[in-house]
Image 1 (tube, one colour):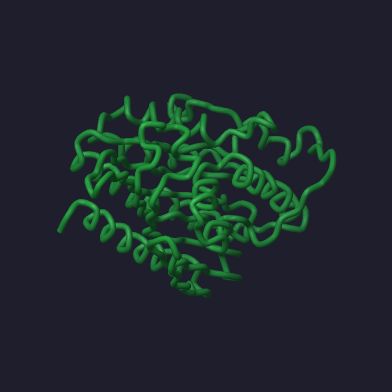
Image 2: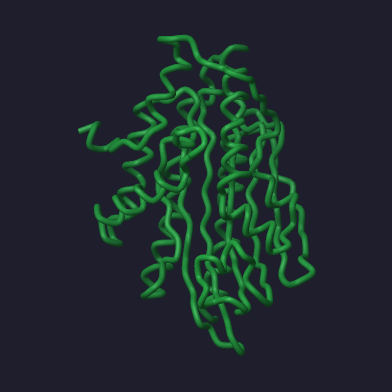
Length: 303
């Protein structure tokens, strides 16, 4: 089996494992699968769970797509690869829980290759996971980051965690709002060098997502809430939409490369609202969120 096929097999298995775990955590709804083909090359399988007991919508997609030339969103950062053919494989997910006390989450792991005359001229791994709470709990945030740091340990330890946490904080930033999308996690791109080592790191991140998220699901999924919390959740989901449509490079790459719009945009929440000039009441639980939407050293603060 060649290197690309090994990554592809891991990612299809990862999608299966995450779907099984989320169905068990939800206890009611099941994922439906949509198989699709892309005219220029490749295809994928999009799985979506709707109207569950825990998850209002959970989408996780696998794609293996290729093209004859890099789209502008990719070649702008790598002008040396302009005109190269390419192939990309990845798994991407966004889960929108029903309960406002349970955070929205995103994860992505991917592998990319550029070719000329059938020979690989560049390859890299990318990915990460991040958390977007509406009513944050310090316990959840610290455990999330401890899990992220632990999986980094065999691959550079604290230095890798610090680098990829910082990258996550910088990437998931809504510049037009002056705030972070959430409380961060890990983010990396253009990771190359030793293939086996970085592939092992990709697997650690992919497998570590469930270790980081499922304990939070179990703690928060039955927390009582009312209309006020639900309305705030829907308002804050608007920030998620803004980021994905304005800043997210994966969304831009997918659309520019002729990807399947339904699969690319499954990350958007099923229900959302905007409100002009909204400001939370001073001292309220909703106002408390703003203090969390900035880069912080969560583990150092926890001691």
